[in-house]
Image (cartoon, rainbow, N blue to C red; front, side, top):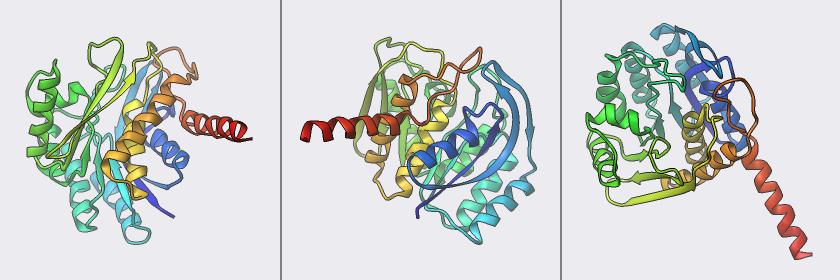
Length: 276
């Protein structure tokens, strides 16, 4: 049984954070474990409150997993402050965990800050050099690289800068681009560049897309997939989750975490019917 660990914040609305990650792990058939860094009171309308845990509490949760169960891959999401970032980085090094996916969560869909300003420096100093994959959206990549990103060339330049900071593979997501027809993610592995394109959906129900996407990459890495295959599967997973809408809540609704499995089941039924 392959295992995946998420180190992130709890979303009481269930669409993002720890909840989204564990749902994604389950759907992709890996055993999910968690370390909670903060408890948030939030729903589809926004984040009403954030209650960060102490770095000691984060440490103890990771140690409980590291000393007994271990993990085949892990992801980080909302880390909130510099103390937690440094604590998480130290534990990753202590347990020699290599398949580390860093989703540098900074801002919630409704605009609430999920990472303190001074923590950006700690993220770049301690966590990026440990990242096997980093998955920023364009606003996050702009903060991390101190540059504006509007074109493909600028997106590639930003990816190369993040690689130079230590991340082995960089995925810059295209969800915030101005293109109204497609969303194009860029993967830079230090040598080659790959793009993953999907049709852009005109919907407000996109809460938790970044968490879900990075969790899907983590699950596939835990199962032994290479980074290119992991990103491709994650792209398919999140596209299905966005397309098969749930319409929950009054604001930015969550995505459908079981849509990918449902789509695969439908495809198998169709193929079996055609064979017969």
